[in-house]
Length: 67
Image (tube, rainbow, N blue to C red; front, side, top):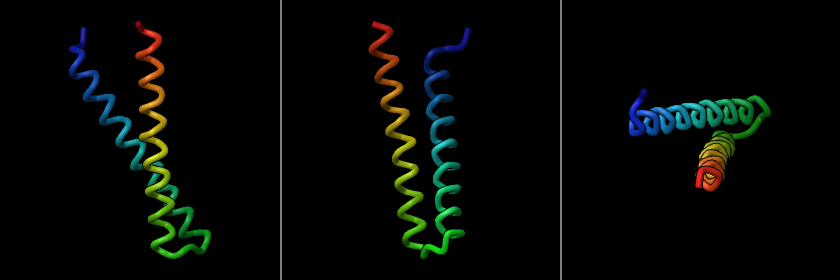
């Protein structure tokens, strides 16, 4: 059985990788749409923050269900 610390660290790594991929895709789409580099960076940062916030909300909901 995997150790809980390892599961938590792997989950955090997975969320960060997914958030970075979503941010890169959002920035690329913003540039393809004709946006400037600062606008694309802002879109990427917003997408990254949204994925991290969504992961936090899901974690809080799962924690509330387990008690």
